[in-house]
Image (cartoon, rainbow, N blue to C red; front, side):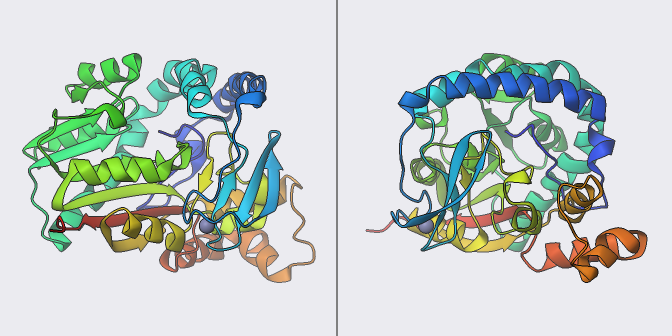
Length: 346
Ligand SMILES: [Zn+2]
């Protein structure tokens, strides 16, 4: 689950519609305390090879909040190393003030608009994959539902025979149940025989947070029926606003330890017994983020007449078509991947 930044697709959208700026300031303060708790356990951080391709050849990329990110020379994935151990990460999420603040203040005031502008379009996109690739609409499973907005949309639609949310955190699991969603309250790696194979497994904004994404995908491969569909969304480390803003990009975050790109995530999926069907970058916020950074003086576009024209001088005319161009050509910082579980090999 992600509470930082907006992850959207579909119609035009502005982050301010979803989250008023005074609330964002309160969240920032909570987040700063979370980061301090992480740094207090730095002796438990671990160096890791590239989480996508396993190569140990990386160049330093940048630092953010005191965490170091490297760029894999083999596949271009940006990743945090050293990174908090699985135990430190588990403690971080269980005791996060940022998530508590988000749950108390931001989620209630923005859920209705998130549901309409984000989760309903997400659900339609999943249905679109099912139709396009002839996927059975038996069991849909969401891993990492957070407070359950997508799972509610999926459940209420009645377009799948069964919908389950996999959520180990008690408050979030309860929030899902309160909204009528069936919950398996376990960590995904602990699921055994609760599921008789998912036809569709979705996981939005989760894989970038994980210490070991390959292990996560191996478990996904066990949970999805052969021929079934896996749908992931996450940041694209090669997208426009990350390329322009580097560590100042919102997607570069203390929690986002893996910033894959379309090719590196596809390769990882193929090694995890999935056939990649489609990768797209339907983000809607790159141009706006870079424009705001320029307006605040965080980046200097004075030497870049072209981008100044698109993002500042003629923003009303060119901003949205430019964002569409990024989205249509794999250049936005938010990506979706649809993959099919390969049949069991004899
Ligand atoms: Zn790599």
